[in-house]
Every structure is written in structure tokens, then in C-alpha cells.
Length: 392
Image 1 (spheres, rainbow, N blue to C red):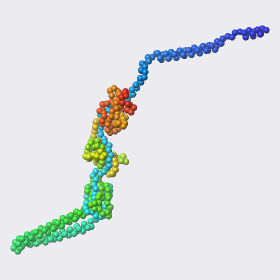
Image 2 (cartoon, rainbow, N blue to C red; image 1 turned 135 degrees about the horizontal axis):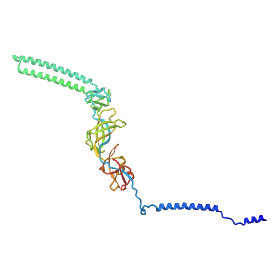
Image 3 (spheres, rainbow, N blue to C red; image 1 turned 45 degrees about the horizontal axis):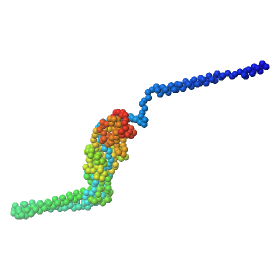
Image 4 (cartoon, rainbow, N blue to C red; image 1 turned 180 degrees about the horizontal axis):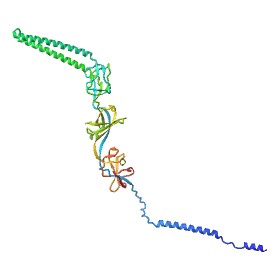
């Protein structure tokens, strides 16, 4: 009975609060509160602790000014070089043909590529008939000389007899006339023989001057005459030239003596020469003229071949720009120039030669402008930039 009363007393005892779980929740709430307070404080410091810049007006775009490199090119003295193309040819091209009446060719004594002297025989024509004619004329000279000798003897005897009165002076004069006639016939026969010999000599086809044989168009056994045309083609002295085709504008600046460098097509070897003749006329169809560049003989220079020439026609004082500064479109070449207000403006230019040193500008710039040296393709006229000077 006492046991039951004790059990009932314990069950009827009121429950005590859970102090451990509530403490943990309280601590967690405190920590969360502290963290939130710190975050709020940091946000307040960020918002109100610094001065905010003035807000841009609603709808206004913030302007971004790009930095660009600019260069003041000045003026430089550069050689004006003109590029041209043309054909290699003999400087003095000599076609050789039949000078006499011709005949059958008996021998050809030279080949293309061979050097010959002035008057050297290139080919021979049969002269059997001409030789017989020359012998006949030589015999006529002998006959005429015999007649002259007889006439001289008769004149001498008549001169002795006229003093003795055996013949008259009139007979003596007739003897003198006979002698003079015989002497004249001798001269005629001699002249006729020399003429025949000259004609025979013309049967030999000879080189008109020393030079290089370029072509041969005759073979032994061929019958040739004055109408046969060119049998040989020669280059006088072996001298060559480049007949450079040039525009009318370039030709006006060309002068005799201008140095040139010629490079045949397909070859890495270049040859020095100089302009020896400038064409006085312009082709009305192509609007081009010819500048002839004299070249020394070389086996690599073959007449009829194509070549390129770089001709220096003088020096000029012009601005020079890096290639990156010059832009190009359908309107032509142009650059961007930075004005006093730091705004870029398009400037049309005329471009000259391009070398390792840069691009020569022959028109459109004075050299004192601030020119955008690069990134011009990303700019537009009127755009404001921040120029950065670059050494020229």
C-alpha cells in the first residue's frame, strides 16, 4: 500500500520545463541576430559611408573615348622608284639579207649565239658564173693594154719622122688620139672588172657590224635573192635592252640616265642598267609609252623574254607613313587625321611607292598632321579619341 501511494504520487507530480533545448534555440537566435546586424551594418556602410557619383541623366549614354596612337610623319627625302614591265630585245637589232643578185647557198658559216666581227662571212652563194665573167673581163684588159702599147709605139715613131718631114703633124695628132683611145679602153676594162668583182663579193653574206648572231634562217642548197628577206638576225655589240611599258604619268618624270634594276621572269638574278631613250610619243590606244633600259650582254638575257624593272627616276620630299596607317576602300586610299579637338577626320591621300621604310604619300598630306598610325579601321569620321603620340 505504501508502494502504490508512492507510485501515484510520482505520476501526479507536474512536469518540469526542458531547459537544455530551449537554451540551444536561444543561443542560435542570438547568433543569427548578430550576423544579420553585421550584414545590415555593412550594407549601410557601403550605401551611406561613401559619396556616390552624380547619376547620369536618364536616357544619356556614357561616352567612351578610345586611345589611339598618332604619328606626325614630317617629310623625308626618298628615291622615286617606278615599277614597269616589258620585253627584252636587242638594243640595235640588225636583220641581214642578200645584198646582191643572190643564187644558191653553198655554205653557212655561223650558228645562233656565235659572236662575229664586222665583215665576217656568214654564208656563201655559188659564184661559178661570176668567176668566168671576171676572167673574161681580165682578158679584155690585157687586149686593151696591148692596143695601148701598139698605139704608143706608133706615136713614138711618128714623132721622129715628123721632124724629118716624112709625115705631117696631122698624122702625128691622129696617132696621139689613137693612143688616148687605147688608154681609155684599158680604164674601162679595168672598171668593168672591178664592178664584176664587187658583184661577186656581194654574193658573200657578211656581218654589217660586230655582234651576236641571234637567228639563222638559211641552209646550204637554198636559193636566195634580194627578195628572200632576213637570213640572219644580229644584236650589234651584243647589247640588250628592256622596252619597259610605262604610263603617261610615269613617263613624264622619266629621264635619260635613270638607273634601273631588271629581273627576268622566272629568274632570281637581277641586272643593272640605265634608261638610254624615252619614247617621244604615247600610244593613243593604251595611253602608254616606252622607256628603253640599256643592258650589258648576259646569257640570261634572251630577246623576246619578259622582265620587270625598278627604275629610279629621282628623289622627292614626301611624308612617309607605316602601312597600318593607310586604309583603302572603293573611294580610294585614305588616312584618319586627328584635329585640335581630338576628333578624327578622313583625309584622301595619293600613295607612292611602298618600301621597307613605309608608304610614301605623294598627295593629301603636308607632313605636319597627326595621323592615326593604326586601328583606323575601327574608327569613324567625327569620333573623339585620346591621341597617344608615337615617335615617327
